[in-house]
Length: 510
Image (cartoon, rainbow, N blue to C red; front, top):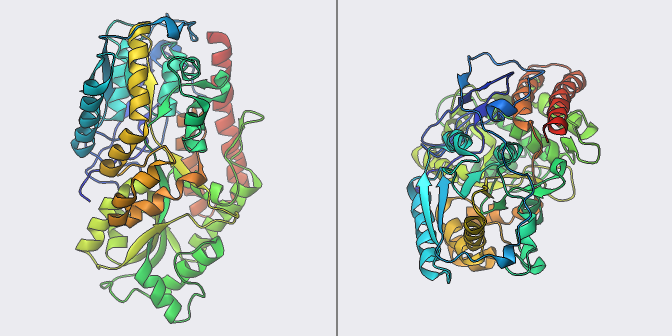
């Protein structure tokens, strides 16, 4: 595979007053520490904070920024958050839809192909025009400049935290009304075609389950493993299982055995079992694998200090204290060590598949694969993430026309075409059957697809990006030997303070 890949987060800072800063780190392939994004000009770096448009931003109570902010244009909240539109009475014929996106290279090519097919085939003579607006961070900043103005596009690709910002600016359509519309909507049977956790991700509880997007593709955290090295460890009697580790105990046994029994194809140098990226997504992935969650929906509060999260972090800390794991010490370090045969396991985004293939082919040339993250639960629990199509407020006719393209892009035919060319994964369950030929030639991709039913997502709440940097700091402290319970209790207090501030803002802003 030769497609470029992208990860899921950009960096920006919630600060007092009229400012926000957005820091974008991009590279030509995804590597760790995962503050680096994979696809040039189509990237989103990992943690930290998402800003509200300037006049909408409350002050931060934790994690003050160290870099001076840059000024951005204020966005007037002029529109109603829940428009009453009689969708069935509208005629979208002849409408032009502007779609802003961050996609490049092969992904932009397949997007344009899907758009051409829609433009030729739709019965309403709707014309979609796609415009590239830079990487995810640049796209977000461009979009905030035009919210509630005549220059606003109808469609934009947005992560959930970005869509929340647009909603707080009162510039986003709650898609529930059109999804359920008897004329234009998605029948319940078709809604059930989406993987349940993926469909739920764009429904935001704090906004009364307002639907801020329609998913069109996803990625997930997976375990990358050196299959040949595991065979050598099993043959030497150092582990008692075959294939990838299914449980944390098996993972620990193999990771520790690897340190004292280097891979036969590796060059000179030390061997290591696991390298951890300082990423809030890694924290979530391991917590999920231990049966935990990091947000309590019922009580609307973070739960980073839950017993399951404490257990997961104590497990990781034990690997460090035993010398079986280390932090990724430079950008791309875990991929390079893995490709050289010096690292048995990594955990990273599924969009990195082509780059793992590249480093292995250029390195020790061994058999490798991906699997679910080792779990103490009966079934895998996978951290699934990705942007969705959000519908910005313009005119009712243009909004309806944009919705019809959203339906098309999330439909089965377009999903199969997109997923077969993008290194992302479809959001419809039935796509697997239609992709059998593709999976026959790309079995690793099929392995990832089969894990989508076990998806779980990180908090889709206001201010989560502000929490992510603090989570990464706590993860670093734990790896360094800090008391896990105390560290997570302190973290939970900090992130819930941010959440309270956001909720206070929401209660007074509308």
